[in-house]
Structure formats: C-alpha cells, structure tokens
Image 1 (tube, helix red, strand yellow):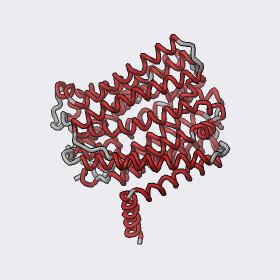
Image 2 (tube, helix red, strand yellow; image 1 turned 90 degrees about the vertical axis):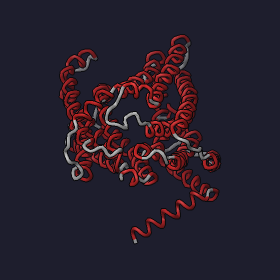
Image 3 (cartoon, one colour; image 1 turned 90 degrees about the horizontal axis):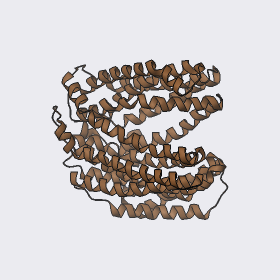
Length: 495
C-alpha cells in the first residue's frame, strides 16, 4: 500500500534539501531579472505576481481532495482531479484575460505591458496543473515533489538566462521563463511517475462531492487573505520603509519554516493509517526541530550580519528578524499539529461528504483558529498604527511582536486539538538536546565577530551548522545511530 511505502525521513529530507537549494536558485533568477530590466519594469513584475495570486487561489481546491482520496486508495481520484483542475485553470485564465483591460486601467498600468500581462495567463494554467499533479504524488511518493522542485528551479534559471541575457527579451522573457518552467515540471511528473499509473477512470460522483465540500477550501482561503491585511496596514500607515524592514526580515525568517518540510510526509501517511501514527508524529517532531531550533538561534545570533547581506540599511531591522525567527519556530510546531488534525480527520472517509460533518470536524475548528489569528493580529496593529506616531522600524517591530505572541497562543490551541485527534508524546528530551547544542553553536558564533560580507557570513553559517551537528553527535545517541544507519545504507547501495 502507498502509505506503507512512504518514508518519513527520506521524503522530508529530500524536500528540505531542495527547498534550501531553491533559495540559491531563486536569488540567481531574481538577479537575472533585476539586472536585465529597469526598476520600473521590476515593479510591474511584482504587480503582475500580486494580480496573478488572486487568479491562482482556485488551484488548491481540487488538489486538497485529490490528496485525501488518493491516499485512501480511491480509484480514479487522480485522473478526475487532473481533468477538473485543467477545466478550472482555463476558466480562471479566461476570467483573467476578460477582466485584464479593466484591471490595467484601474491600476493605471501602461498598455505597453499588455503582452506581458497576457502571457501571465500561462502561469495561471501551469500553476493549476502542477498543483493537482503534486497532490497525487504527495499521497503516494512525497519525495518526488523535491525532485520536481529541482526541475522547476533549474529550468527557470536556464530559460531565464537564455531569454533575458542571450535573447534580450526583457520582462516578458521572465514571465515566459516562469511559465515554461512550470510546464516542464508538469511533464516531468507525468512522464516519470504518473502516466503509467493512470487508468483514466473519470469519477463525476467525486467531482460533485469535491465541489460541494469546497466550502472548506474557500473558508481556508479567506482566512489567509484576512491575515495579509496586517501587512497592508503597515504599508498604509507606516510607509514603504517600514514594509521594507518587515519584508526583509520575513524573507530570512521564512527559511526557518522550510524545516517543516521534513514532516510533510506525515499527512498522507496518517490519512491512510492514523491509528498507529503516534510513532510517526514523534519521528516527524524530532526531524523538524533538529533543524528548526539551530536555524532559529543561528538567525538570532547572526541577524545583523544576515540582514546586511541584503542591504546595510536593513541591519537595523535586527529586532524584527529576531522576533520573526521565534515566530517561524512556533509555526514549525503548528505545521505538525495541523498535519495531525488533517491526517486523522475522517469526515470524508466515505465518498459522500456531508456539510454537517464538515462543520463538526476538528479540521474545520483548526481552520477557524486562522480567523481568530487574523482578528488578533489585524485589529491591534490597526489600532496601534492608526493612533500612535511610530517610526518605520518601531511599526515593523510592533507587527512582528503581535504576530509572535498570537502565534504562541494559537500554537498551544492547535496542540490541544491535535492531542484530541491522536495520542502522542512530545520528545522533550530530544528538544532539550537540540536547544543545548544550538546554544553552544550560538555562543561560538557570537564570540567570533566578523565583517558582514557574503564571503565571510556564508562560511560562518556553514561552520555553525557543522559545530551544531558535531555537538549533537556527541550528546545524542539517536543522532549517532541515525548517521551510522545512513552511512551503512549508502555504502550497501553504491558498493
């Protein structure tokens, strides 16, 4: 069975490593764009991304159900999901193209960029196709999403280089590059993994239930959009400099969140077999925190150096990065608790899905917490920003602090809900060892103060990681045994 074949450590590590790889390729792709388009055109690029984000919201609705149905061995779920999401993609792209003229006029966007915005419709289609293919693979072979990410990242860098640097196509070349990379990723998924498994049995009864139950997806999407209002308030009341401080710090803190990918295979495994999932939860918790804890403390100690790499002017946003780093660590906990709730929920165990069961489910309760979080963040920050005269840095710090405090409260709430879904024990001893090794690493990094230059900071980060794992190997027997097992498997496989 698919669930039995899912390897938590292997799948999580593959995706985690390729996500870290994507940080570098993402930077390269951004540099290719910024050095071959004008600042005004780069602003248009950001604006197009914002607009397209609204037309790709529907891309996750069908895939959500495809993952759940495929994990439970429902025949025809993958094929039905692919056909439906392609239909949804073309509908969404058509609406985008029909309203494009009005959108550009409303935002006062020059008509010279019309061809670029038209090509942007390909991103909508590609996003929908990739989403449903990944949803299918997620439930069977989650590690393949890491390989797909690698294909996408390498493709967009190579195509971006050809179109922007060699052919000098400018901004439209960047959009074509992103679109082409998505389609190459889709072809990779189909040819390498899925086409030979498809039986092309379309189940319209599934489609009926999925669209009926999509109220759950819409409920989730709205809460996410509400939470982004806080960032909008920061821009309106504190200005673009405050938003820049917050955005720079957030871009670093989000990398800590990549550690959550180490547990991303937990969800499909629990969907198939949740009654014995307590061991999988403990393993996932250890894997995530083994990386999240040192990444958090490392970001705190090196906060000023890392921000200076972006720009010297961002160095003063150090308090924002420290706060958001802790917030990202809390989110790593929350992601595991969310996987437990979603993976053990059985309101859709039968093909027939009832509204009453959805509303009474713990998954619905978990999504409701997102509305609570949005209210607890947006209302206070609105009141503070609208009534107090704060500097750009102070405003960014306030938003970061509010986010962190609210996240801490709701992480505890998610933990309580998860414990009601599945009995599991927190690996406190392992967590203590991770913090101990991380504190020792942080002390070493703090003592050796160095100039904030790329050629120095990056090796310093790598040195810190080496010291952390060296200390952890000394104090933790489980880590030593895991390393020995990995070396043994690698030797047996290649020799």
